[in-house]
Length: 139
Image 1 (cartoon, rainbow, N blue to C red):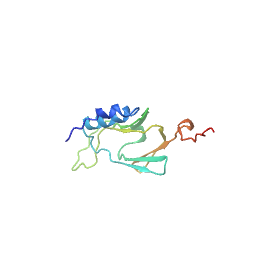
Image 2 (image 1 turned 90 degrees about the vertical axis):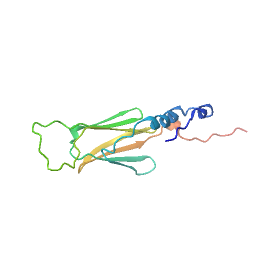
Image 3 (image 1 turned 45 degrees about the vertical axis):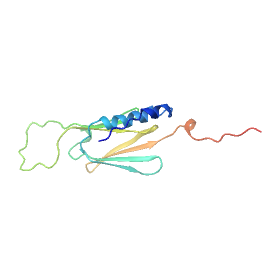
C-alpha cells in the first residue's frame, strides 16, 4: 500500500483539519470485518437510511449511540445457560460494534427493526445560519 503525505495540504486549506484527520486515520486503521453486513441508502437530498442485517439479535441486545459526528451500533449476544450442539453453524453469533462517521448536521431521526433488519434513518438538517444566502451589493 502506498503512503501519501497530505501535510502540505494543511498550508492551503483552512478548516479542513477534521477531513484530513479522517483520511489519515482511515489509512492507519485495520480493516473492519464485514459483520454485520449493511447497506447505506440515500432516499433524497437530505435523508439517508442504514440497514443492517442483525439476525439473532433482539431490540434489547442492540445499542445505538450518537456522539457528535460518530454513530456507534453495537450488539451483544446474551450467553444462554445451555449451549447447543451444532452439526453446522452458519449463523454468526458474536458481539459486534460498527462505527459510522457522520457528516456535519446529520442526526439519527428514527430506528426500527423488521424481519431481522435494523433500519436507522438519518436526516441532514443544516441550520438557517449555515445555508447559502444572497448578499446585496450597495450602490
